[in-house]
Structures are given as structure tokens and as C-alpha cells.
Image 1 (tube, rainbow, N blue to C red):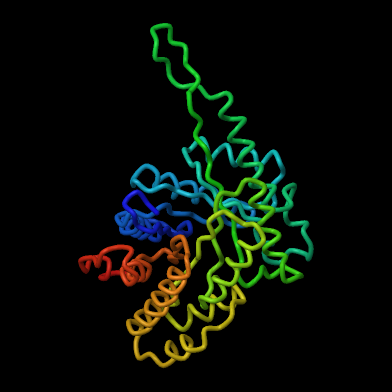
Image 2 (image 1 turned 180 degrees about the vertical axis):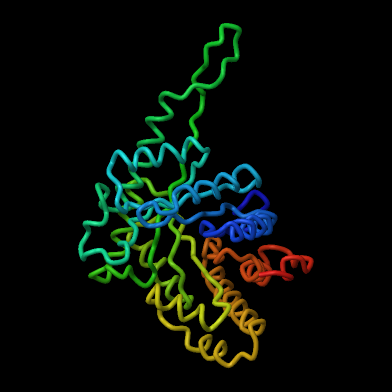
Length: 318
């Protein structure tokens, strides 16, 4: 629960790929931030391909809004030295929340784990983030409070929040049914403070996974990740990328819709029903994949009553 007794929610964005997209993204961030989310996360490209643009978006969120920014980091292609330097760069920018990911192999890479670099798992990245913050904090000083100009050591240390990914229907590279639960337990043991799931379209997939995780000893919050499928094309793309189980009724309704507006309404309606079911089943909040657009995700939050029905401003643009 948040301080006002409301269930927390959060959003995911990706870095813009053009100047025009950057302008649009800042508008989207404004709409999202106005609702008071717990955090806004920003993705990080394979091999650090979007490192600078990711950091720019995170800095913008931190400096221009009251929302906590959360940085995605991956193991892909980094040496220990490079990963250490990267974590320090984000911490120096005031970013203290992370999503530690193993990461996917770049397109065209060979089979196996050679793409990973020195860090072989998200658990190792979780440990590294905590280690870097601890080492960094040991040498931190604050500006002088006395006339001699000597800085002083802070009495309290800023702690990092490290989230990890969870896969209700199994990671594509999992080879046994309980591997994803064991992996989540390992991430928790390494210092993960929260898990965020890959998106899904069936409430029972999330609820069954959480029940199994709890039975195995996972105690950290498992935040469900949802993305409103606001067009038939987007749904097909989501299914292609994630391998998730097809929502048959949603597929049929989107295919038979007469307009883009009707498809958006259908996607939002499905996401609202899904959110209501998992919240009733005990989900600790919602994490919404925005596709860098605010209209659909805010409509979902309105539909489940996590934010008040807004004036039509956010409904006038996608």
C-alpha cells in the first residue's frame, strides 16, 4: 500500500529513437507522473545500445517529476569492470532503483551463453549492484557543516531497490517446470527486493505462479506486468515476441472491430478485467507496459479505480 492507502502502480517506458519521439515521450511522462506512480522504469538496449538515451530519460524523470526512476540493466556483453562502471554511473546520476536482467542475446548471435560477458545471471548482477552501492557509500561524504570546510560522513546510507524479472509461463530458455521458481529464489537470495512479471493474458497464469513461488519460499512482492493489447497487430507482435498463450476471445474481438478506436476500447476492457481478477487474487499492485503511450494504461487504472476518472485531456491523444 502507498502512504494514502492506495495500491501502488508503475509504468515502463523505452528510450526514444528520434527527436520527435523524445518530445512525445516527455509529454507522456508528464501524463504518467501526474497520477502518482510508485516508479517509472526505463528499458536498456542489448549490449548497452541505448545506455545514454536511457540515462537521459531517467534523469528527466528524476529532475522534472516527483516520480522515482528505475533503471533496467542487463548482463549482456559486459565485463565486471564495465558493469561496475555502469552501475556507478547510474548511482552518480541519483538513480537508486534497478531492474536487474540477464538479458537476451543480440540478433544473429550464436547459441549458448557467450553473449553474456562476465556476469552469467541476473542474480550476479543483483549482487554487483548492492556491492557497488556499499563500496560507494563507504567513501561518501557530505558538504561541510563547519567552518573548517571538512566534509562529514552521512549518518544514514541510501539503499538501492533491485527488482528482477519473473516469468509466470516460464522463461523461453527454461528446461524444466520448476526452473523459474528456483531462479526467482536465487535472485531473492542475492538481494532482490521485488519481482516484476513478464506480461500475460490469463489471470490464472499469474495467480498459479505466485502460489507456487510462495510455497517454495519466495517472499518478495511479485508485481504483475500488464500491457493493454490495443490493436490486432500489436497483439500478434506481443505473442510473437513473448510466446505467451493466446487470449482467444480478445483475438476474435480485435479482429472483428470496425475501427482503431474500437480496438483500443476492447484492449483496455480486457486489461481492466484481467487487472481486477489478479488484484482480487492478492496482487500487490500493477506494472503497466506503456509502449510509450499514456492513454490506454491510464484508462486501465481508471477502470480498476486506482486513479480517479480524469478530465478528457489524456484521452485526446495516444
